[in-house]
Image 1: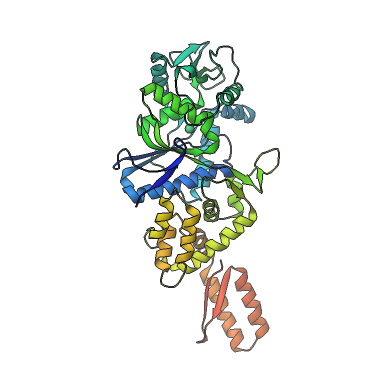
Image 2: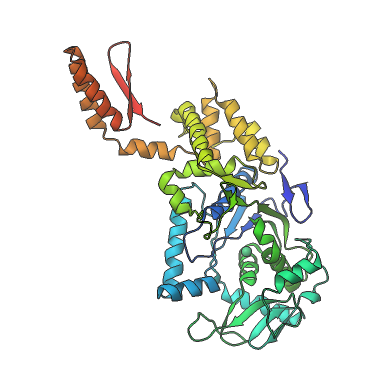
Length: 442
Ligand SMILES: [Zn+2]
């Protein structure tokens, strides 16, 4: 099976050839931990989980390394900790825990490594030293800046017009910058801010250098796939490329760059000011994690996704339908049916994969449907969770009481008991042989 992936770097769908098929390497930018993650953050987590599962299938689970970082040094974190009057470490460990709990409900596999910026300071300092030594960075007023004009092909990933990039960089005006587009690698920290000793004084890293250091530490100077949201292409990923390539004098940082599209809420950009800001945690209060996961995958990852309650309802209905057909088989092994695998190998075409699941939803294919749902990260967990909450003894006692009422032709009592059973989330089935069986309502 040939895997093709759309590469932002080449702007085309290319055949994926790993540098080393025995060690396929994937890096995805993770969250900055200062608050509950919003629903848009769930998209790369789910999309790249599917890619990780696919790569594990194609190359073997032991031959794929997946790194998703935690950004736990950031000015937004510093500001929030000050606002709440708590130590920075308390805020970041609390929000990291929240993030882990939220995404566990989405059935994502744990990455091989989940490095934190605070644990990667020696590598960050080493990289900055290399960049200064190579003539790609300079020190000014306690800051270290990347010298953008020193890199001849800066901007190759985002392909933005120069004016655009200058306008973007101008947001960050500073008298110590030599060039308008130069960006911060290291900045000084006052006594009230987190800081580490460095050759340039006590300070903290800029955001972009964190990812260059964490990917280098766990995946090396060059690796296979780098992923993230489309909003990260510029400046974050452009600057990651600049740092890593200039530090090592290489032509490429990652061979393939994959970006997932935006997420909108009811056709509008999500923002706190519009009052439509949704966290993963809030959505999980109303919907099972697997429904959220399924809803995310019904849209191709590169397309914008419109997040609506109607879409979630539809996702729940489809998924429950699949579970109804495959439910007894969900403990089967995880194995992709061939047509689903083909769809995924075509640039992770999950809408097509779901269409293929519909095709498997017919007699004699329940086993394949169950195994494929499993392989895609759908285990029917929420249906099982619901079942686990039902008191079986109580249901059986009520069924016996109802059978007795029916035998006595006490229809009113029989109806009342049926309603009571119904309220427990159970569906009754009166069999032809006079017995009654039940199952969990979906
Ligand atoms: Zn990053």
